[in-house]
Length: 111
Image (cartoon, rainbow, N blue to C red; front, side, top):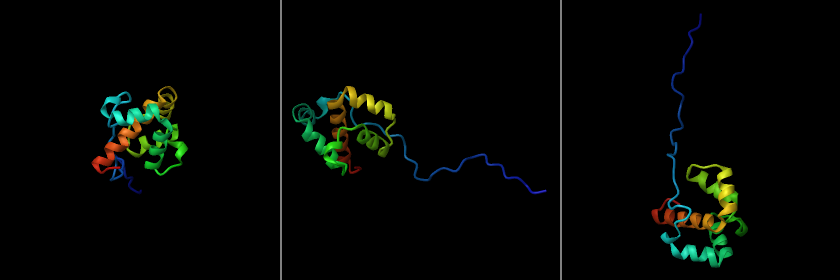
C-alpha cells in the first residue's frame, strides 16, 4: 500500500507583500495644499498628472479603474465597490489623495 503525504502547511509565495495603506487620508487636504488647490481649481490638470504618473491615458486619472489599479499595486486594502463609491461621491478628494500618495511614494523611492 502506498503511503499518503499529508500537507499541513500550504506553500507561500516568497515575495508576499505586506498589507499597505494610503499615505494620507481621503480628506487630508492640508497635508499638501498645492495638490488640493489644483484638484479644486484645475481638476483636468491634476487628472492628467495622475494619469501621466501611472503611464495611462490622460482621461483615466480619476477613474475607478485607476484607483483600483493603484490600490492593488501597493496592496492597499479595499474593494472595487469602495473605490467606486469614493470616486463617485468624492471625486476631487479621491484624485487628490491619489496624487498625494504618488508624490510621497516618489519621495520615498518606492513609486
